[in-house]
Image (spheres, rainbow, N blue to C red):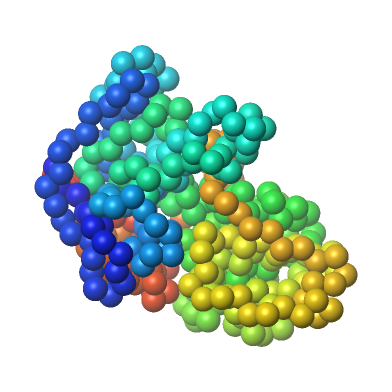
Length: 336
């Protein structure tokens, strides 16, 4: 099979992913073999490529994987051949540490990320433990389902950790793949949503999806925010969001890494009055399972822009430049 491989840390502008011949994977005990139909692209891939997150090189990237089961390893019996499943960022966790026992497997010291610590979905076939795969609801096409597995599921975790309540105001900083799904959940929950983004096209999409207001990150919103979620890769948005939080408000940082440092914070200006900052690390299987059910119920329909697998470098460059509306998805199955 041919897959897109990252061999060394680079900038995405240098087009570091190469289409390479790879051995067909074989499922081990308790694993399933998935023929990949599509794989979403994510800012986490940019973090891996550019060295803010260190992958196990060389690596096949991709952690928003949708495909059909074509092989079962010894003892695998959760699914049957032909089932359509998704694979998310959590590739495995130990299951025995205190974090795993308490339902916080996202914090497991042995946590492995799909497409980072183990091969991902930028290739026609991949394997994963059957406990870390999820049936895809019939409501969604393959391309619609792919962003739900990370952008949607981690956005769901962001929203749950924010503690936002019906009738409260939620600010979204950045309006890419995850935020355009979170806004649909927040409005469904009865929240008023304000969106902060430099992109005029993204502001228009936010209004189309139900935002009560959309402006630039430095613009003052109509009212203070009870909660804010920062999806941006830059540090400057953190003090901007804290400045417009209501007393007792909470800011969720929804990225694995920031490309540049968070500026110094002034305690009395940014943090006093019981304001909180909380980071979000990875996601659990329960996050993915619960979110897929909720997404089908609402329903949440992602805006999707499709690319062929050999266009992965170009698609990721557009993602870095903020030029993708909604979510980018690579078509894999015709790349054998």
